Length: 87
Image (cartoon, rainbow, N blue to C red; front, side, top):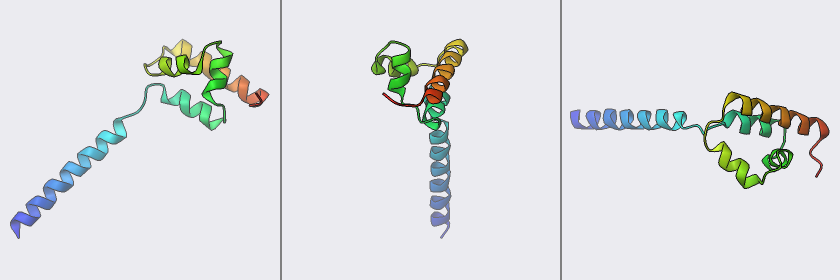
């Protein structure tokens, strides 16, 4: 009986650690991605406004951007959302 309790306790500990690690895994620039998604602006529209390809934008978003670039992207997302998402 004691072995079962120890085994269950150990399993619960491992699972709780894994769930904490999963919560901490956030993509760089996730706030920009979520901001665009929330305003229903696809990233390819943001890339077009920056005169770059969508893939180049995705690559840039892989690493944390400086605050100035984030602000610029937020402004672009807002302007695209105001104009509408028409191609």
